[in-house]
Length: 299
Image (cartoon, rainbow, N blue to C red):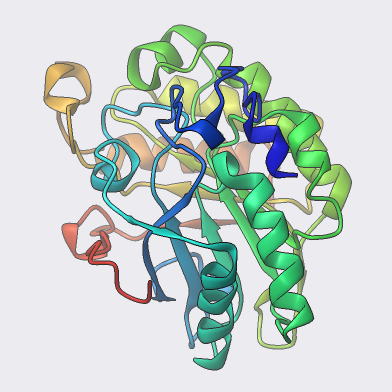
């Protein structure tokens, strides 16, 4: 599948560059997979991290440009190390040996062909853990279809309803339409969440949404779309952990933390819609303590 990188149209950007020849598009990734950290992550949703942690692999580069990204060192500034398919499979297997609950791939979209090869290789070598696709949902349905049968858990963001907001903060035109089509494809592949006896997710869709300061109405529109288009069994992770990282200071309206009142209003709307399943964050989630130290650990 690497030939897809010769004229890369993996994501909605449709850059058409030859990444195998070293050309780069919006995401700035060339032909090699780059990883910034791989470790047992204890700060994901409870059904993902559990007690032993989620075997999380943070990939370098990203196809959207969020001005408030807490992981900007890897998403925007390119920190990371190039790895081969064999080395990446080895990373997966080492994480499994540590007893983690799953292999959690963070911002994987731009490396889809290489990751498909890696999953197949790792499984042939004994990988048996669920694969979590942890993405920004700015993805092509055609690309997602190539993952059918390989991904067990889809964990997409649904960041914005309003297109002007998506463009202003992430440079991602048509974000909502693109992301919702992607999410419907994800759901068609794996359906509602299935958990083991310890409450750890084995398969299914969980939609994440980060509530932004001053944008509670946008959050409500997203929840309304979910309530009208997906069954109640789907889980929603409503996050309050926003902090004004990276270039957020350039936008005064989001250059502050989310207030408790804003977050509580969105949670109340969640219940008013009749939604039943979800995760909420406690006060204090917006802390630098929960931002990984990108140090090439585990790579």
